[in-house]
Amino acid sequence: MKVGLCVVCTGKYIKFLKNFVAGARTFFCPQHYLRLFVFADCEVTGSDVSWYKTAHEPWPGPTLHRYHSTLAARDELLRQDYLYTCDVDMGFADTIGDEIFGDLVATLHPGFVNKSRDQFTYERRPESRACIPAGKGVRYYAGGFQGGRSACYVSAMETMREMIDDDERRGIVPIWHDESALNCYLVAHPPTLVLPPTFCCQETRMIPGRKLLCLNKDHIALRT
Image 1 (cartoon, rainbow, N blue to C red):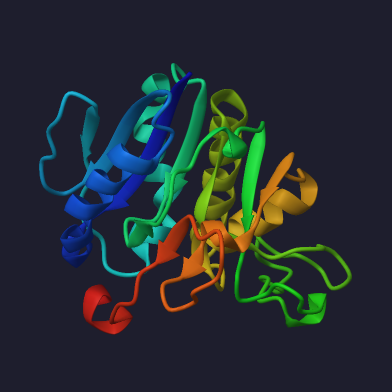
Image 2: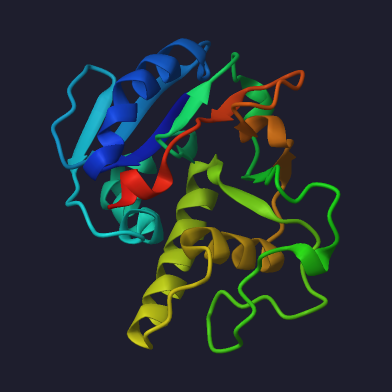
């Protein structure tokens, strides 16, 4: 299989990129042909890398516009069999393989497992395209790792990009940015494969089966 892994990395987040790329090369679908799509404000080279120069934006621009950045490579992305996006400040803890293959793949957010729906931090403002009304939605998904079959996932990203653009035209930023748009999209288009929170696990949680780790960091320092 041809598998693409996309990562957006600008500004101070560049400090994570070297280890992310090394980890992906070792642990991410090693039995398949991996292509790394790097959207960064500094050049990244390698025979397995497609680099797309991406200007840095003030926070929350880099995450809010995740799908905008990634879709700059749309034609090349569609040449992959499967396609995933991952936060650059994630660490690889174990081999990730065919268990992630599905048409539309989402990851349970570790902060909301076993919590009731009224505790989810969905966007609730009805004027937002990312709004999930009370009584809707059954899970809360993490933006840190997502993907699927390339055609399905590119279509999802195009819709979420349009949702975010529509909100911005009206002066709205969803409460959790691209993650809010993702959760709203997945209410209308349920994922065909739901990954456990071991694919988006806090670094300090020593639970069995960890695959991807949310690395400890100073968010404020990185975003200013």
